[in-house]
Amino acid sequence: MHEPADIAANDNRRPAGRLERGALTLELEVREGVLRPEGDTDLAYPRRRSRRSAKSRTSGPLIRVPQGTELRVKIRNAFPDSTLSVCGLTSRPTPGDTGARMSGNTTRES
Image (tube, rainbow, N blue to C red; front, top):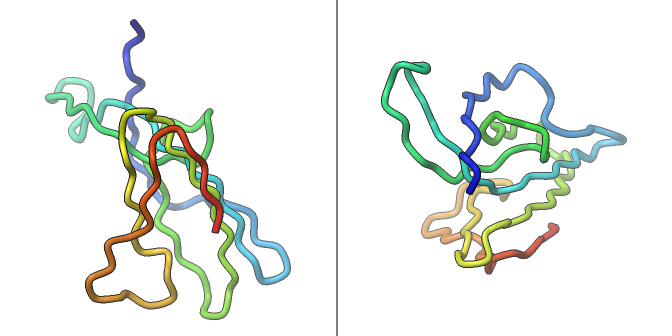
């Protein structure tokens, strides 16, 4: 059995996707990891988090784009035994938004 990777805080200083001709393309994957908010000496909290790619060790990005930008998002739920709810990928917050539900071990594009 392997040890989950440490999750580093995403400082949101680097672009998380590709912005081309008014469209931002992102690829996110939900994986398991260990959050250590105060560094290596602090308590570790097992978490599932989104990340930008299979090589990334940071938590998911804050997505900010200029109004009118098309957003193309591909999300992979790598856990076969869990359902993921993705919220907030709309132009404006919607009261009561419960998000798009994804069953385990699936990929969804929007």
